[in-house]
Image (cartoon, rainbow, N blue to C red; front, side, top):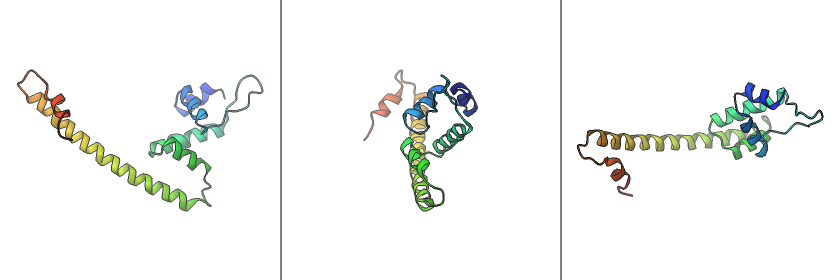
Amino acid sequence: MKISELANKANVSVETIRYYQREQLLDIPSNQTGIRQYTLSHLEKMQFIKNAKLAGFSIAEIKQLIQFDSVKDRTTILALSEHKKKDLQIKIQELKSAMTFLQSLVKQCKSSEQPECPILEGLKGDC
């Protein structure tokens, strides 16, 4: 299949595929006929990358995961995944705090009778 077909089947853009190739997550097929032909293996790798990103893994971490053997490296994979879970829990708490803060500022702006929106002053607040 051509790169456009791979992109369509993987539900990503052609540029995303090229980006993953530049990042060495996805190999570039040979160009024997003048047109690169992508295989089912490429599609499967794209699905792996998409799922790893969905799980919160960075490009660098996905590079590691791709290299692992599911039997030999099981302990390492588990440790990396447990660490990622902790990172995500921290990020979730940070996002919840950000949402609470922003909701408060928006509420102040909506209820304020002053001509200035208090959001900007609120963002200047305590460090």
